[in-house]
Image (cartoon, rainbow, N blue to C red):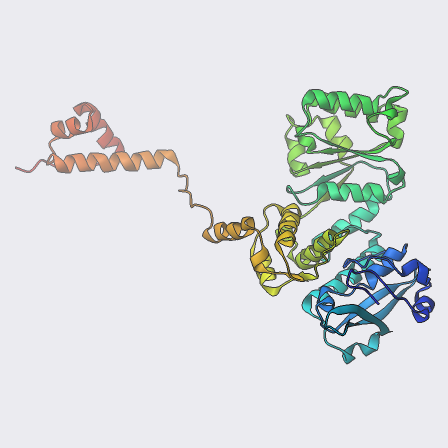
Length: 442
């Protein structure tokens, strides 16, 4: 049973036998509407058993679920939620019954948001089992390729260059690689080359790569395990040399330090632009390159990604939202998301704050999205095409000379005067442009 405050109030002997968790482990746990791919704590079980918000509003709901057992086993089951009311008609609790998966047709069918929640849980389990990735949500071909590259990158210590548009999740991927690698017990040190000045970058790199004996008292509590250079194409050339020298030398500190970087530029363009990156630094960065596609090129991921971001925002919050209405999906799928996943997260955060129902509706979406859709519908202002200059000038000159000749009734002196040139020059231009010399009318 789950109380109105979303805490588990009753957990019977049958649930203990099924899951391996004891009543004292589970009762009092807060149920958050999130997907938990790992079965490591009672909180993971509580998340699996969480009723959707519609159940707290009085609706009978049935959901497919993967029940996480204490020994790590996962059991496919159906969760049937029945709201129970007190004598005054107020919600007393939500009764949850764990049934065999085949019996899900006995109660009310799932809503679309509840189905997406279950689909997200299944997808995250698949990604963990296949690629070992816990913090990526993807099923599009382009992002499954990124997941495969992630699995390779986390198993090696080679430098990694991640490239893609702003907001596409480059630093998120770099952190995921670090925290799923043997270096997870060391610090992830990000430096943004666009934000920090050349002086600050140089000083921080020297302190990090060539530290004194007591360097790790400050500024990092943990010994660094990964150096991540965001917007690496903005790193000054002298700072590039500092990094290249440190990693190419027998510096004992860099033996345990991994180099990762990100850029919005395609690596081939960086290789061609010698003014941006030194050749030795570029080759140091690029043994392994990962391209993250923009959100508009991975729209198959949009619904599950949005559901994941919403559920992550549910964590630790008293308000637990189920998902999105159909009218929201229409807007989301019409929009081209120039800010990528970063913009999607900002939109969902603002919409969640404005929402007072179990589902986010179109009316809750922030003005930025609505105005962006309007601007997108209008399209960019059409620019005049650029034409070759010589033909354009010749056409304009011919047109003006013919107009002056017509206005002066082919009086060459008068036409030259109208055009602001001498008569000999007019004759030369007429000959070059092939304008016939017709006699003036009398």
